[in-house]
Length: 106
Image 1: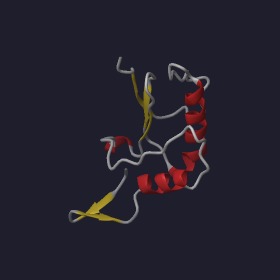
Image 2: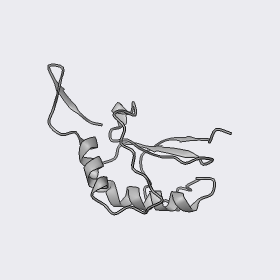
Image 3: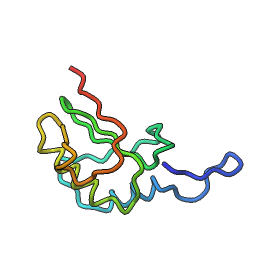
Image 4: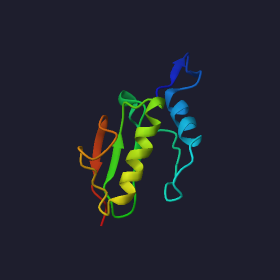
């Protein structure tokens, strides 16, 4: 997310790589799995993360920054507590950047 390209070559470290590194440096709840992906097609909203679990809503958040790590993890912790995955705006620590809320496949 947020890579800089010069003459067809990626240059430097992207904000997405910085965000991933910041997330990987944290001690995660054992119920959380961090799964890096090469691209989530959210270029116009870099950096992008998703919260997904079986039988729950999937949330896609964008316009994130490496400094948002604490809010991302707090929101992920809240997501774990929600049987349906629904994160009401008033309850969730990460208030900005919702790109999509996708219903579970049944």
